[in-house]
Image (cartoon, rainbow over all chains, first blue to last red; front, side):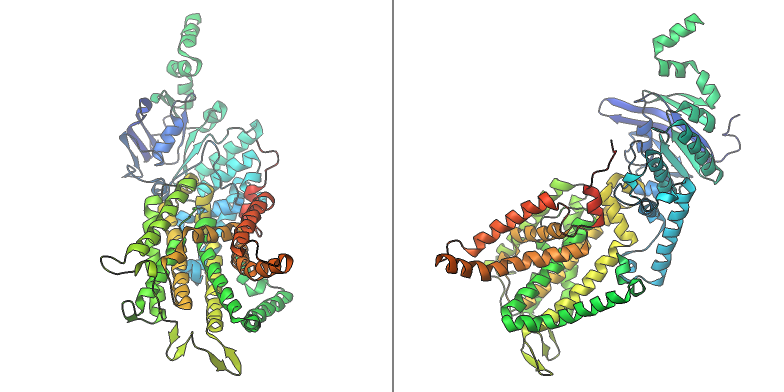
Length: 268
Length: 360
């Protein structure tokens, strides 16, 4: 079951390399993500998953390679330009606007799709007022969508951990992304929370947003992802359906350590 | 906060309060003139500081960019007015032409300062802006040669007052039996300007722009990832803050009639920043309170400390100026200990300083 077939390509990466001094965080990584896919990105700690996110979203610039998103190259774009093009992200170590309310957090996500300027803000013309209303309405809708509408007026930092992760997703969705890049959304969640997160991810996909997912929770990855890319030491070591990747000896080696896997093979 | 401006949100009682405040503001200069015209001048200066503090609040309070050279924009505005309305170049443009020019020139300098400092935050930004403030002052001090642009340390004298047709803000007039001195006229103008600036501030704070500034203050990387053009938003904050500084400077020039680089020393920047911090960074009402308190305090001390000492000891032991700095420092220490978010903190600042229970 290759999900690539019959799907138009949304994002393709070719030969992405990123070096920090002598450290090769990413070497020659390439992949394509189709419209409507949930694409998993896994690998041991330090494999370069978050680096790939940071390069993709313009926080770092790659040394080599190119991303083509929706038919356009992303090279040289600033993070805010990338967001405007339609890639929204969350962060591994939650980066909400901690001292603003949940609602304000999502309203800020609407910034990139709204237009009021200083003149509009000062004179509050009809257009600006209508836009403000629409921003607030949409923010409430998104809070309800991810299931934290009861905490709309609580400060982001006072929300429960799982709710903070969901709020980050709502804020990202507020930018109307074509691709939602989630960096370990299930980290720190219990089994129930993870299960309901899975429902949320599937809902987001059903509503037409493609998802790129970094996750350590293998159960979630295996159940929700159409295809998975495995990174180790900045290199792509496997790509394919969740089931295939799981069986790949290189992947097993990467996760369990080379020698152990050899021993396992020998034992088998 | 914007609900403050929505008449429907007010209970009837609040209208009574607003009317009382309006009446108090209208009567104030005449009450003060009864004590001495000096007090009207002091009040005017205090309102100018309110304007300055509100301008700086956009940069520091909203966008979170620590600016220690803010007085430079005041200086730019003041000199723009002085050069275009004094015998120095023999130019006498009307004030409504010069004030926008002053705002634009200050705005330009705001962007000039903002552009190279976009990547700096906190202490580093503070040091660069401090340097910028000094550069402007030193330029003003030395631009008397080879071409006499600023008249150097002597400053510029005989600056025109505001004038509309034959109505001059500097002349004493009796209108409907009331004695309108120059300072009283300026007082009403300043109250009008400050009200406009307050409305602009409130509206900016509760807009798409204001939220973007708050986002930058809270987490710049997340703000950028959400599509906020942090470069433009920061430059906008600098530009807006600087424009308010420029307008205040123009009014300062006209009310004083004389300016020199000495009026724009570093201590003045520190003073305006202290007003913002003392009152409550980010909260417009707090900032106003801070500005009024800190600008009135030295004058009150001037008139009380000296006589009090003479009565107690028979002579002046400590200069009022010395006591002023002592009390000022003491007040700041106490503030930081007991009300670190300011006298009237913004909701945001209060939240920031509170500890989250159960947080890791």
